Length: 100
Image (cartoon, rainbow, N blue to C red; front, top):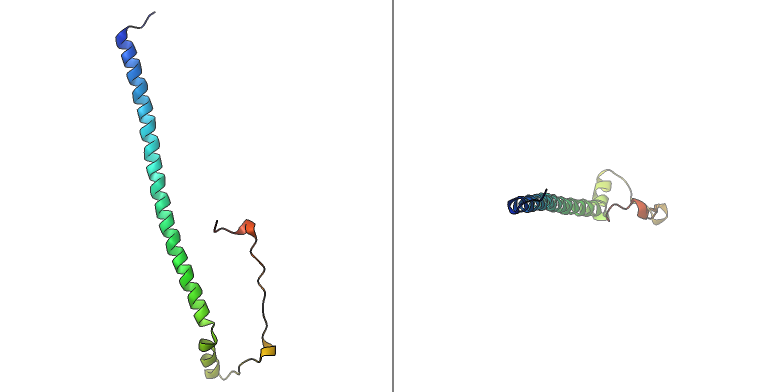
């Protein structure tokens, strides 16, 4: 059986509409993914800012200018240099580094 011209037109039209539907669906998925990526980047920026603020507060709070007056109020004596204990932190394992 041989197809007439109008059937070819319908066939090509259906093929075009199917392809266009796939393209539109993929575009919508890509836009949704781009929006989620933008929100995640904003959240990461906010978390990094909170981390920086927490590290700053730790540095300020652990400084001698803050600790010494509190220790004097509690009646504690400052430690001598030979009484200091330095703790070493092992380097971070690159396989557990999540900042990449």
